[in-house]
Length: 368
Image (cartoon, rainbow, N blue to C red):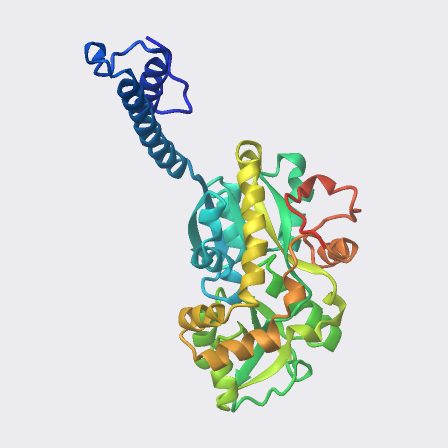
């Protein structure tokens, strides 16, 4: 029996064999030569051949659908604007068009997200603080189990620090020793931004990791922490209603204006075995970002996920998420990131971009 190629299922191969033999005349097709109907015989033969080809086409279509490439992706902080790229891509049908099937896992923050990709539990980890990734690579070198495959956020924009309306703290300068101020987790972008803001203002407040924005909100409102951190649109309604006050915004950290502060990562083994799929994934992410800033449906999804009005959701995007900050093709101002990593103890000794060049494997660069 003819051998069956591995890329074609057995049924499709048998049908193809039948068709080829029909074409060669090996199978009789109601041969009624005695009736002098050779024309009809030929017509019937071709009718059967075409029918078989149609069945084969359907079979190949099913096989193609079944062959969608699968990726597991971890995303920090479900529901936020830049945590929604995958959902936007699914809604718009971009992943299906690209032949990708995405399984998403949501985490509480960058440190947890890095752990999932480092362990190999996922192929890609989205939205990770770049300082933590640099520190890990400086220790582990090429043995580090992940690589940076794209920028995620450049500049500091969407985060802010806030207090209850009755707090005596008006600005970070008012937060002296004995006061506590929140950030999500060590190595995260909120960690970097906060340290930069404290340095700029000379504040002596004590940074405390408090996890995600919802938990931090509770800790701040109950007085367990003096100054909470948040990301829009979370707590933005309270700000508008006068129940809380912003005391610092990420954009106040002017030193970070052109610095990539978050990056997307991929597992090293996944890059070896699924590189083309990961490159297609990043192309779709770029396309989904473009869709998010041009299609009103994206604001509706954002509002629904965060359980806020569309007006609040739109305010959050318009005022806190400049589109230019979401570029994925270039890691910017790496020299400053290395300086910050040393100053904030993510590095034990100075490093140059060349020293950590192996950390970066940018899989897709959009055309400008």
